[in-house]
Image (tube, rainbow, N blue to C red; front, side, top):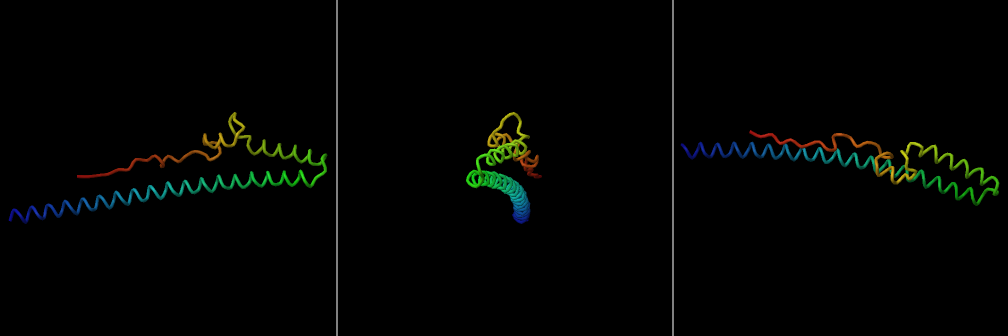
Length: 122
């Protein structure tokens, strides 16, 4: 009778442990999926900004070749005004790279990125 009780207790403990491990794995999987989705959205945002800047550079190169010098100078001035308007939100630093590293271009990181995982037990 004692061996049966011991075996039942062992099986119950094993089932509870298996359930806790499954719950923990599910919690880790959800947290990882959310973080990956956030990083992919940041990647898309940065890629979009990079493509826009490349387009602006391509337009300026084309304007340099296609426009007469006087018209190119006017276009260059407008290009500089556009860039200053686009990157006007950068705090003190004119470099988009430094602003991205400080989070000004990408934006704030959500609070749930640093959330702690909770393991409950009896």
